[in-house]
Length: 463
Image (cartoon, rainbow, N blue to C red; front, side, top):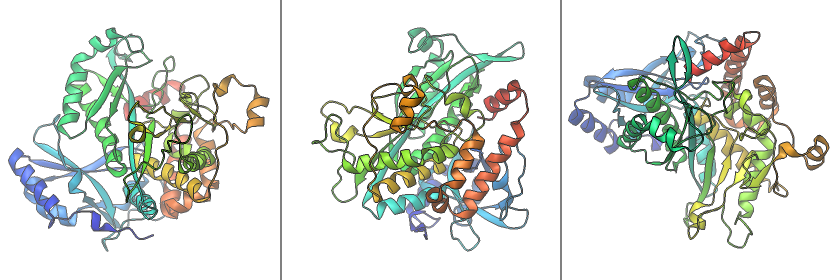
């Protein structure tokens, strides 16, 4: 599929001119051109403001090999991603923000374009654009958001420990991190991200921030903004913010649950909602979407839970889900259909995927989830009856009889499932799918045989 890049503003558009004006008014010196790689590391280059007008049009050169770097900065031998050849980091001016946590600096999220100005097949952001265009062809507009959980930690005598020992939702936890939370939320607001809830979560030192949903591409940008902002603000308070899935083995894991809703581009109606469907108002299209996600979930997990550390979190009775199943307000099911808010049923009906953490590349995660859901819609799949108990409380025989498969127990297993899933790999494009798998497999290999402490420390620091 050819992507319509007319939606990406260039230096001659009002959006680009607005960026230039904002940079001048704020007296910025640098503007970061950012991208997220296969290891979900946020990388980029920064241009001096005096060169920004040209850079908006022509981008910044990037070696193709950079996308073959894993989260340990180990370069992998990926065909098409070698030292020979370049792409361009071309910014999306509509993603521009002034960064409130560093002096005189702004940033934009970038698409990776070939030298002929076409999207590079290996670009994660372009993959999401392709998927959204496929949805738009069916009159579907996608709204989405991540729920962000992370740990605040500090160093004590050379050891990284949780920043506090507060209990879940406790006011003690609220007070302990009030200064960080206030500055963090203010920094998000400055960047146009609207916080909705902030609270101390289940683990010691664990925080959760919920933000306002947005169109899917912008929601993926926002995932990166939240991570970047939390880490920077935490450092200003002498803290470490880690979005690793399980940085402390004795604590609960951190997820990044995805909430999605589908909207008719003509009527404006929520396509997941049917008031005649009881008790939760999930439409037939919604059921098809859920069924598609469930069918592809063992493969999806390689993208939504993509680190070795992720599989310490995906355990029974850990509020993360360990089985392929769905339910209404069932927080141990992989897919949850949340109850809508009174009087706003159409506006708040959505689907939540719990098997996601913040070590994922958000563009790949959204693109893969939507690909799976659209497959379920197009094939009129049926998810079957919802599960109304914790699947971990069922016997092995009961789960087998109901078809509740265990999710992959390791990154290796998940990558094997992804390799066998032609719907996902074909949608991703061969270069992207192959490159992603090689990079993530290299991380699994790198941690194989290493002590637990090494794995935990690396993930805590990298994410």
